Image 1: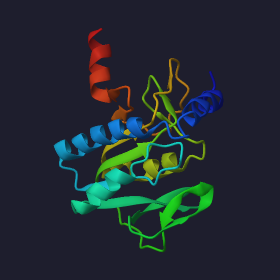
Image 2 (image 1 turned 45 degrees about the vertical axis):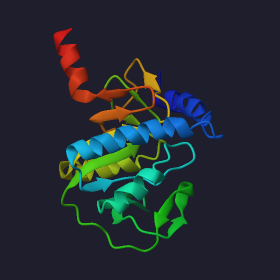
Image 3 (image 1 turned 180 degrees about the horizontal axis):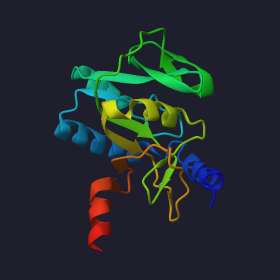
Length: 193
């Protein structure tokens, strides 16, 4: 299967959850994310501002802000993005994505956890996104500064064959309402089996 076909099929499946039938699913994902954040004692996080098709992590953002954690979000620039501190108010920009208004760029030092939305994945646990390549370009430059990458989705869209490319972002953990997949455990299961 080609990545573009897999992406289109996955988007069609995810679109079923746009009309109000996703709150319980989002809550499950947020609960799992929060548990990982607490267990890892993550202080600096890269988050995203959700589109209607993505897990709504706004309640998580509110909680993390109240706890005094440092939160960054993508700020679109050309074919990629830079990180800016999360702050209100937000403004709707390119592709319908909300962003903080003018903000200084974050000089990459260390991100404890990056929480990234995904459309789907395959056996390599690489991310299939919306096809713009923004996360791929960002992570190609900055992955050395990011300790752990968590992918989230409302539904696990999984291709049995490899549909991703070598440059697609690799996740350490994938969190959906149905299951949590850890890259290290998956690797160890294959090595033993």
